[in-house]
Image 1 (cartoon, rainbow, N blue to C red):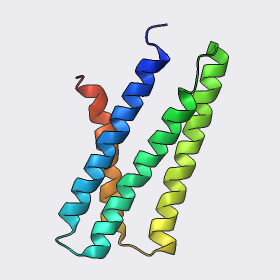
Image 2 (image 1 turned 90 degrees about the horizontal axis):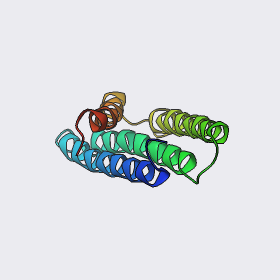
Image 3 (image 1 turned 120 degrees about the vertical axis):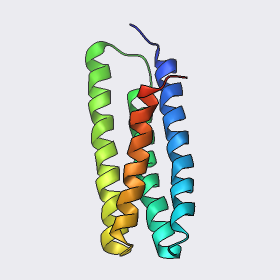
Image 4 (image 1 turned 90 degrees about the vertical axis):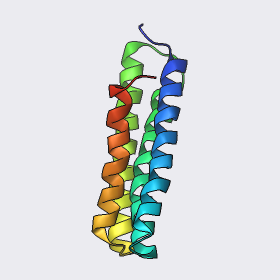
Length: 121
């Protein structure tokens, strides 16, 4: 084992916290266009943070064998995508918030996820 589950939990928490921070930042930037746009951008980014929080909670819930760890990781990924797709559905269809702002928030949160592995610190 290269990394402990505690290390994975810390990394997952760090990524989720950064995504929440970016969500607030994107929401503030879109506030210049209006409240609905700011809410859409904030919600789009928070949906990704929620999905990653579910993934991290499920994947790093304990120490198990390799087969069980893979199963927990896959179940976490399923939960993440249910949260992201379902959340975006609620944002765009039910709440009828502006799609460009919501998609920008979503992309900004995923950019944090990608950059977290590029720059270690």
